[in-house]
Image 1: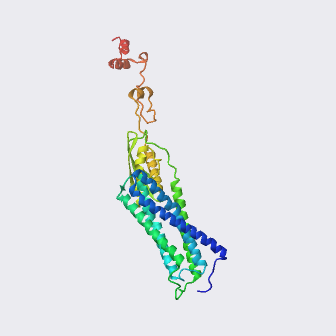
Image 2 (image 1 turned 90 degrees about the horizontal axis):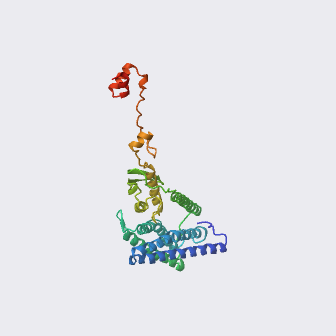
Image 3 (image 1 turned 30 degrees about the vertical axis):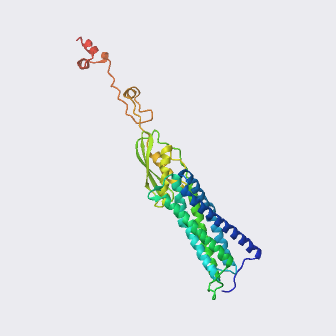
Length: 359
């Protein structure tokens, strides 16, 4: 395999190893906590269930995922820049296969199950759009237990180092391997940072405190662009928001559960409410689309009374374009009329004109 690069000093290796062990311990602790919390959800009341699920959600998002990334990164440093490598020992190969499996589980099915579980718990429903709380909770629990078993197995592999050294070392161009791993890591990190910044921008979307009061009855559509064009329909009646529905939404389960924010908006009669935990970004986008729908609803017309229209000749106090009643044409003075005009006026009932003619 040629000359192998190593970390610059034993002291540096000890620091990397210490970080690796601490992050692995945090990873193991987070998994243990999630498994214990998951085992309790079935035995508590609905009102307390959300607290347990939120704790599991925070452990997953704030502790487990970060600890796993640090453990993986420090493990890669040891594999690339020390004598251990990836394939020199059978137990190392098995360990990396298990680590890759854990990464896939943590990133996809477990994240999906935890977010779905806490979102339905926050919404206070057991099922929505065919998505059941019990399914999410069961999946989250068993995935946490399975990961615990695998992590403990990895710990034993690292401590015992069974199977011995490979009889024949695999021929690997270390330089190509290092640059491949670094390149993939950089692409993954850049994608993660970009997504995090994008989600942060969407969650910071300003939601105005607009209300349906004083707006015309009807159904109005609103849109919001958050990496996807969301569309909702808001129905107004009697100056109140009476119904909301999504016309265009993502197919992802968290996006479907985010529609549980609609009852909150209707109850508050404004689009700015608390988002659904586990579906925060989509909730904010649906709030923004609801605000757009309310902004498009015109003000209800207030018609002026006939008396006001005749006297003032103006529209309603809200600025509606009422057509003023025309004023009657001015009648010329009797003294200025000729005989023909006097006769016509007398015929129309003008007594002064009749007197002038001597009738």
